[in-house]
Image (cartoon, rainbow, N blue to C red; front, side, top):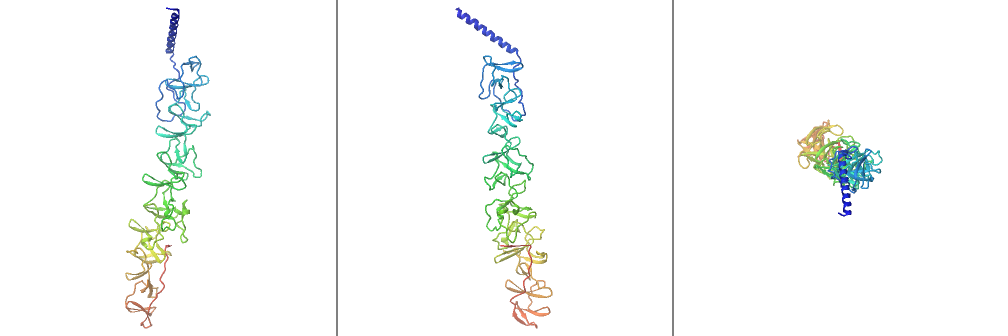
Length: 521
């Protein structure tokens, strides 16, 4: 064996012995460094954790280095192959990453590079939530999520567990209202993106701002409104000042540009229907504060009216009638398209003036309010009078002879309303069952006169004080003196002896009565 080989063998033997001795020392040292099962310093959100990296791995971009962990003066440090303390760098042990500070010590319960967080043991937090109290000056108060690489999520959306969350540029979880382009989101107090219906605090004069926390309400009120957030989290909303309709669970709703579900009366149609004099056909009713869906095919008694709504400016007020007053309860019927039934300007018959609902006829004014009592409609060459029960009735149209109807002045009369045909429901003018009527009103001779002549629809009739039409061909006295004679069905004047004189061509003035409501078309 040469001298060089002997020297090499001795040297190699010494190196291997030293290595073996070192290993034995390590095995006798039971203090292995930072504990593996420590918890994150701070409050954690209950979100299922993803499986962490395997033993010996480090966060993305973190360098591995040779060397070893040493404990000096009760603190763990890491030395490189040259025996120098590693500073300002990451090292791993048992699958966890630790950050060694400027003096080589393990940093604990703090942010590293404003991106990573290490817990009370110094281990990098992965796949977990951290709450910052904002007192360290590093992060604002709020929740932060550390991903599988240990980095705090920032600037965007992240699916975590069963929820979807949004983070700002500093990685803080957003809460409350969040505006992104033309889209509106609501992130609850827990940060989870809202889906479905939510009743939230809302002030249209002070719109919510990004990141603000809004109080939730159990029901709508003066300070809260209903919103609907789609499966993608975006609130249903109009793109402009116009209203946006949406079908949700089989019902139709409307939303404004802020995503607020509309309630009450709103003019959602761009123009009125033909025959609508005031614009009521532009309106629909969207229920009370907690309803919001389009009312259709049903009756509703309401104390608020289109003229009380924010859209009242689209109504045309008629000089003869100003519409219902706020606070007065009125009955409305909403058709299948949600438009309230109303009196059309094209009505020339009672059939055209009324609305049939479940086989019954009702009368609605130009503003959609159901009417009771005596109602008169005047149009060119047309006068229609109908009766729809007293004030406390159901408003159904009445037909036939009805005694004791109080007119608009309170005076009671007898009326007859056609019971069939095209004029059904309209007051009769002419003879019915031996009595004379004009515009539905029973025509009678004045008290004490006995008999009186009236001309209705071009024909002259002689009636008594009960309104009975006289048919007996004889001479008739008025105030004890002969005045009329019937001959061949024609009425004549007479002299004092009862002898037939000239034909009666005119009659007394026809009686008048006041209606509860009158409309000019």
